[in-house]
Length: 287
Image (cartoon, rainbow, N blue to C red; front, side, top):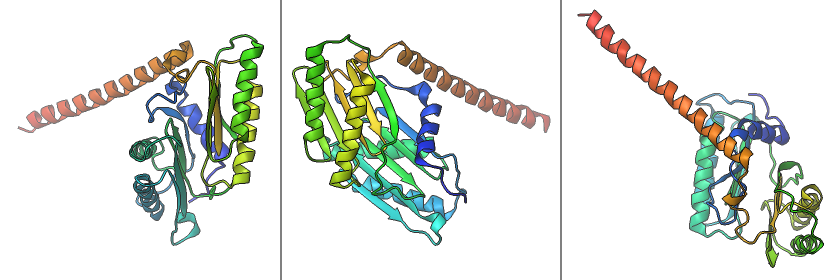
């Protein structure tokens, strides 16, 4: 079995494949199982192989652990180095344990479908993040930009921008892997993946916040997800990451996704119907 491609390729591949099903701008108040981003490696493993068994064991461990802990990582050893699989999950810092467990179970379920027979996969939902791979990434700082999303510009308002910068600055200075802050209508949230050290977390979040301010400019909201941390803000109050931000491109993406699902369903029905006719006429011909 070939080795896995880089994490950057993993994430870019999946983001491209599922761009048609992009959801409206994420919301802290939206469903915790709403899709944010994800990716699958291009390499495949052999069905019924030891590696497949190890992935199943890993994902089961992640789901079980999420019932009592908001973060954990596992390494499942194999008889050879090619069969070793690494994985982790993390829930958003404000989630209750039941919500965390539900979110991780949903993420693992989706990964099983979206990344079927791939050596690695990662999925970020609103409330949790799950990743597995056959190349170790645990404890490795990675500031690759995975997802950047900026809202429409509201025009330059010095007071609003100063307030936003102050909120983001407070997130940068606050300790801990999960950080929230706000002032007036400006709300912000940031979080590191739990395998980073305190210093690595601070470095990652500083990078995410700096990029967020520079790349999103005067946007009324912004999301900056790096491979091991993220920072987000909104200038429209705590519900500003809601579906109210859904634009034409997002709506078109949802419609396209619905059409594609409908086409797949239609093709499946035709195949079933033709198979049924084949059995009926085949049976009559034999009489």
